[in-house]
Image 1: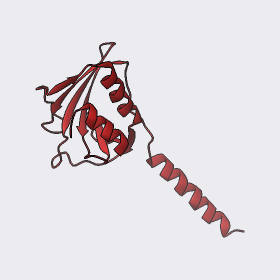
Image 2: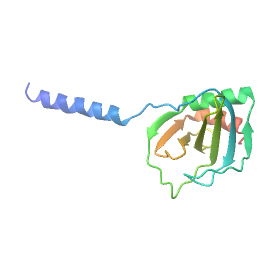
Image 3: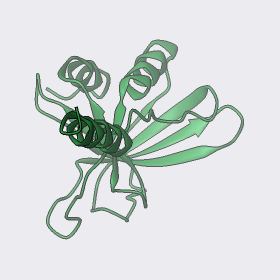
Image 4: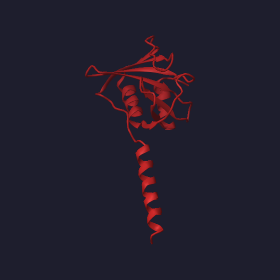
Length: 141
């Protein structure tokens, strides 16, 4: 019985440590989205204000909100000196607040990654299903 106790204690501690390291954090929306602007990214920690497109229609905005709400947070080291996100996104909320995001858009049937600008170690993963939806909203083939 004495040999079982240390094993159970180690197993219990391992489970707790794994639970503490994983995060099920979701992206925070500050209010209803009014519109979204999209630009080609020039790199992490920088924001390109030369917009390519804007999402204004209710259907597209609702779809974009669905994508953001589906994103699940993970802690991930990103080498911001070597990688570059595909898009910079500015979200304008009805209450006047804004969010700056970087988007690494996955190919069709692959995951995508959102990051709040300045917080690139907190990555929010979007499933392949929602990446396909996002690609349609952004009109990327």
